[in-house]
Amino acid sequence: MLMVRVRSAQLLLLLVSLAALAGFFLFFVGADALADRNNFQFFADSKTYMRIYAGNAFLANDTLLSVSDNYVGPLLVLRAMGGNIYLVMFFNILIFWLSVVGITATLRTDPLKIGALLLLSPLTISSLLAVNKEIFVLPFMALAIAAYTRRSVLLLLLALGASVLVRWQLTAFFLVVIIASFPLRIMQHRRFVLLVLLGVSSVVYLVLSDVFADVIAVVERSVWEDFDQGSGLFTVLNSYQQRGFYFLVFPLKAAHLLFALGLRVDRIMSPTNIYNDLFVGLHCAVTLVTFSVVVKRRLLTLESDLMFATCVFLVVFCLSPIYAPRYLYPVFVTLMLVLAGAPRRLGSVGSRSELPAHVRITAATPQTST
Image (cartoon, one colour):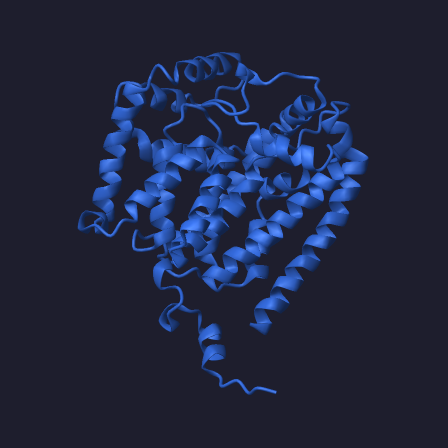
């Protein structure tokens, strides 16, 4: 327990140092970028949220929450912080620290190690610097993992609430995971469950095609307007998905979203869009390396609760016709958790057989009272 507290304190010290650097960055570069006074776009939609908060822009579809737009979380943060970008940055870093400590306390892993691993991704850094939705992924995961391991209805409801602050797809994913966690014999066959989920998703997408019509139209328009359309593979995969073949194109679509931009070395070395080419591109490269290490260490298995949940997440999120690798940021987080020693079975995380060696030794050492 003492070692965990020390590592948590060390992570906090690291984040305090990062906050100081972030403050300098915001003062000299970031604040002007958020105010549209320079082109260093280190964020996705932060500028939009700030304009809406300031009353200089309107809500898309005149609603805080819809299939294509979600402003709830960012606007709540801006309102609570009074629109101050420095307070928002401190809030994000605090959420990061509390979430990592919460996750590692449940999984009994090293908070400093996992925190440092997550900071290898430029998307993590970006999520700490300005108002965004990705930061809520971490408290959602902390609450969801704790809810599963402790069988807590309250934590489950809190996790559902946190998922709404990110995207409706995250809420849908969590509901699917809850159903897949029921102690039914059929649910023990995880490959079969994933195949059924892929088949159902293929049909559901066809049935709800009218709901996604506006989103698809926006996607098609953005493709035509993009001067660098890449290989066009993603567009082809979407066309097959619209015909009901999502269950066939899913593996390629998931791999494309997770890794493709990480292979665009030309864009990374000479970015025309700082956020998409540099931040997202480097994130995809880091994710590819992490995935390769996970595969090499034979940690990619459906016997792992986190890996199974990740596969379900991908099935749900890759259904979107939007090309947005940042939506898959939770996959990077779970890969790092698995790489850092998260147990395969979360339900038995409290058993000594599932604990890391150093924790088992500590637990076996008799304690003397003073």
